[in-house]
Image (cartoon, rainbow, N blue to C red):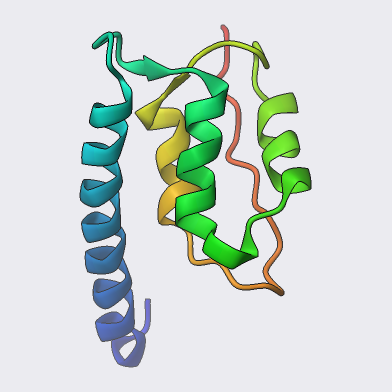
Length: 102
């Protein structure tokens, strides 16, 4: 990172941390069975909250279908990168890499 970009990088990291903390508590409220996971319908609700008017069914479907077990309950750690990402109507959905099973 160049010196002139450092402040912007730090600001973005602080923003992501704040957003992550807020969504963590939302996730905890939705995890009524305290399993550390929520069903897909509740994960979709968090996606909608994070993206607001930029939410699309197509993006959520890509998230679901690129998972190791698409219909499985979703952990916060799996959702977090998608929740803290900045979104606009013109932004492209970025797929977080799948963890290796090796």
